[in-house]
Length: 440
Length: 143
Image (cartoon, rainbow over all chains, first blue to last red; front, side, top):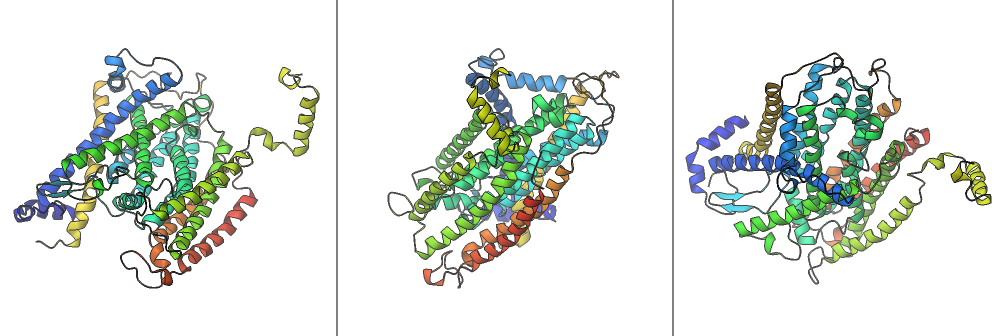
């Protein structure tokens, strides 16, 4: 049906000759050309970006650990990703005898495909008025943007689970199981945190969410706790430290991709990094205004010129790079969680917190509306609605971190001991301060 | 100006996704195919054993695993469906807490009601009972 529609649109010369209105979306042949162009550019930027991210990861880790990092291939190590890629294509692939071949080969693709198509709905710049009409700057300008991301990003778990199972290796299986349990646990909190954004925007389309933030201010302040939950959940969803249980090197060799080599391993790697890019882009879009330029309304209104497009694109990329840097910064700063701590954080803290936060946000919005606090920008470019909700969130944030800091929910190992036992240990160490550490 | 039928609008919105899926899938197969064409596999029995830190693998990997993982999967379905139910509620929240149809997406203060919030409170209260039960039963406890 759609193919037929497309054929009609492409073969109808009247349609695109009559459209010159810069505010009406492009149709027919120009639409097809622009879509293919956007698709290829987004795919290329993602692939090259992922390659550069592997270099950035190594450079940043080197910087944090006071080393030099890769600097031999190309100028300052810039060709290192190309060398790595070439090596991965040329390497011999090993297939374990015990593996179930069809799934073993399918798994990397199942992980690769969803990770690269999730980015399709994210608006990465202001629309652009071309000769043939308005070009929206996302590969697919769908009205269900957020739902699409929620649906497709969870498909990635199949690749990981099937990789773990089909390898027929104990470490792979454990990695796959851990990963699936972790990803589905945090998906709940992630979805619920995003519900608070939908309460403010009243629309699941990502363009509409960006627009709401342009008129009201970035969501990160009035929905601070929601951002906190979303950010932690995205780290868990992308299997990054401090939640990299599926591939905890010291416990599981390499987790679900232990048996994979050469190009198949490379595809898992690409999938992981492009998931990271998409998660960062999602955080930027939902909480940091997407392609919005802060402090000005110039970028929110037509005419949609080339300059506006380039500037907003630049701002989007700057925000994106900040989050990608945050991922790496945290990776080389925080140690890994224990698995039970990870699960309690997800189920016993994040889930009730997200539930309560939805009720609090809903209630606060209603009360603020009743008090007739205006949502639009009023004084000094600040919306009162935004400011009041933000202050409420700051107060809540203090509460949340005090509770989180108590160590009851994400407990260290000694919390399993009885209070009596702990008291005895404390008395022991108080009586002889250095005895415990000397193994006395 | 031509009137677009629903199908044409939908095609313009969703067809790019299909195109991208196809493009990425072709790339994925192409990458694997390219590496299959370039490499010459030289399998040996040792190379083909499962890697378990250098020790000959003991037994089969597909044995029974902890029931906890299964439990998490079941709980996930319950709570994820809850999340899915919340999304339309959140999107429609401003209308739900307004007695009359919205005017330009806004509601006069005199027409605001607690209906939307109350609905969600009832929904969450019912779920909370189940959540507390699951917690007390120890299904969320990992050891």
